[in-house]
Image 1 (cartoon, each protein chain N blue to C red):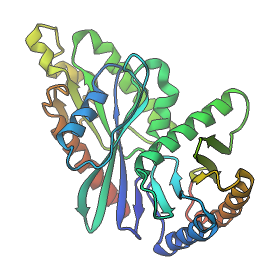
Image 2 (image 1 turned 45 degrees about the horizontal axis):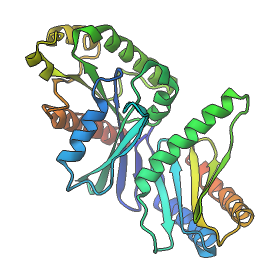
Image 3 (image 1 turned 90 degrees about the horizontal axis):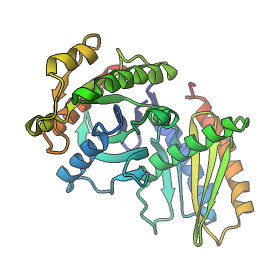
Image 4 (image 1 turned 90 degrees about the vertical axis):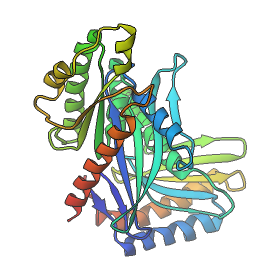
Length: 134
Length: 201
């Protein structure tokens, strides 16, 4: 299946990522699909990560964890969090096909980040549902 | 599931190198990475076990310039070939747009090629895709071993085993020496792009 998001939908999503996440101090955020394609990404302008490789690995990582969930009888783990010394990564599944990945430093608490991510995910869901085909 | 981004005028295309274990899938990507070093801005990503075997996948993103005004980003992946890693193989196939099946030309690997191709067909079916409809190119790798006196399957035998129903382009190749590696890649890119353009119309 090939799907396309319209310019307006993409503008909408990027706006959300900027206002809800980057503006509160998140370093880098990207929305990908489970195939590892990048749909939208935003950063604070100070970092240059290789987002294409990150997206491929994130999709693979999430897929592997989902398979683990099934083995232990859990439907899925819908969010993941990797903690580092300075940088942390948070993954949140959206619908069945998409993943929101947030990279943030220790200046933001995990609780606050999760709260903001949940809000953003709800908003993005509305935009994605219009194009979503399982 | 190629992703088209009208805002950035960009298309992301996923091509997966599939085939039996130790067949040369990673070597294909390594050759491409070396050959086009100047054009590939990022590092090749690879997840290996200690024994240098692919555990999960290799990943190589690659820009090929513009098609119909869109920047085309080709993303090359390999799967782990070993039979036991089917779950990870299936994950990598998610959203695939085109496939290179890297077969091992060594006579002793004849059965393994056939099993792997069958496995590809099953895994594609899991995503409701048909091996007969998806763009696919066959590569008969390790042709260089002939000089060392290692018994190889003839081109005709490989065609009969693997390509009698698919009837798709195939190449005799040596990934380690680079013979036909780029040709294989160019072929799958052109087949895949044609299929995506057709689908978008």
